[in-house]
Length: 568
Image (cartoon, rainbow, N blue to C red; front, side, top):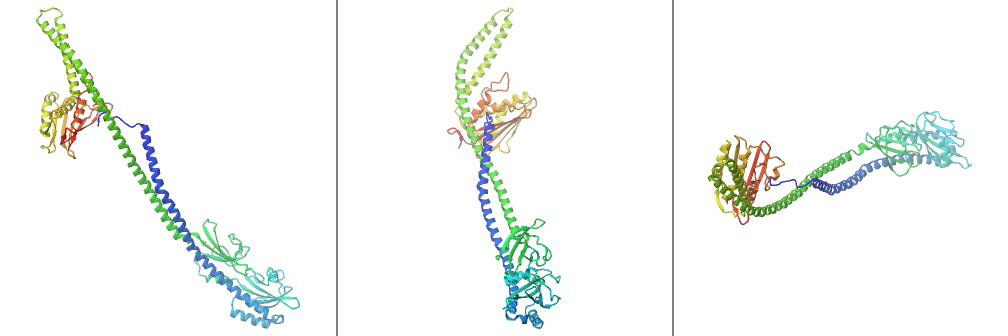
């Protein structure tokens, strides 16, 4: 760790970094996802429209073709009945022989006819050819009878009638010269209409049927009821145009209703197709589109969080570096101020200390020459105490002068292996007194050399080793290792298994006059060490845990340049 490495950023700054992170993520997501969503929505809408046209057009074409077939079927039979009514006289139409001949011709030429009859103005069927006994039946109260009088031609709804079989009739009005009239009427079974629908070859999931204007089925339906039952769907008013609407069945499934009216008939042709079958391909493509969009959004969000995190971390690191640089500048200025103060204080204190020391020594010499008297021993102890404390003060002032002194490095080539062994020899006596072992590991770098100041390096190593020896217990261990560190640098580690330094004290250990050795430490050793390391272009870091030990890491350039203070 670096000296005085206190926490620079408070909770407010952390909140601002989080705010910046949130803003960055939001902007990146918005800028990336908004165009994607718009583009996806446009593609979705356009593709759906195109697909809808491709789906609906075939259905519309199919129902239009079927409508045209049904209209042709009905119009052919209306035309032939009009011909009969206009070509033959009333007397001819009353002839059973002629009517039978006409009926046979109709069945052979057109098919679908069940019977043929002639009804007078009173509604009485006066001539009839067919499989049922309907001669003499009166139809005056039937809807088709009255509609034929007013409209001239009438195609009825499908009904059971007297015969009890579902059929519809085509009736043609024939005015007579005496003001009276006749109606030529033919019946056709509804099975003929069903057959026309079956011929259309519709898909098995599609249902096509006829309803009348009141919504009653005119043909059997696959899924929606029997003939003459009420249609389960509500249809709009009949239109000559083919119309499309959407509805739902009893189970809630969406259905497409395509309907168109048959000209000159009460019939409405209806096609019912489940939306699920029509849109199956579209749903598959839509799901693929949505999955693609979902995956894209997830990737964008991940990229936004990752990119924003790197961005904010880079800004935070730059801010921390700037703050650390400012702190080091302040620390350097502080050290310089303390150095100037220390130099002045040392000079001012040294002179009185010299006088006290000389006078105390003189008194001691005089006392030695005097004869014994009762207080002599006590006075000698006091003088010895004065001399010891003067010596301690003198040592402190000399350290202060050394701290304040501008040291100009004297660079020379140093073999690091020999140098470390030499330093260990200097402190071996103190280590033996505490039974402390010092081990050296060079990792095979016996010839590793650096250009630096030998004397200043000695002071750094001795200061750190003395602190380590004091920190370890009896029988402790100190481990020294060195190796190249890349970029033409050397890394040196000094590790002990001593009592360690608390987290509270760790940021302050390089500050002048800060000491954990209560009562005897000056607090200048590591401050001087830090200043020397910086002067030699190096860096110093500390890691420590209480009751586990401390690790000092020194990094020096192999080629120190005293002009620039760094490696060349």
